[in-house]
Image: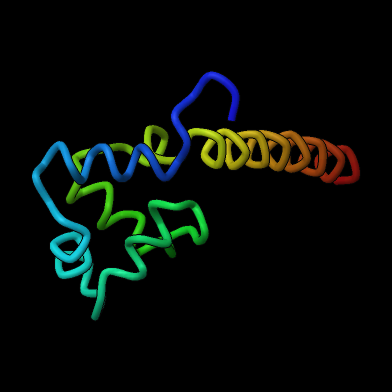
Length: 96
């Protein structure tokens, strides 16, 4: 990632800012051990939607800050889908 902190450093940085150990964050997320948190921090896996929301709440961070590249990708996908929907809707109106 050019010119940006990597995903894993953002999670680790916020965790450390709040004084949490990986095991603390694992407990707050409801994970049995800290290996899942370690995997998030190293960018090996992404949290599922529920854990992403929990992470955001625990770390007082927006998804856009934790995962800027991924959220930008999602925004582009949604904007493209909106354009396609608009075209489809316009086409259907002309047929009726």
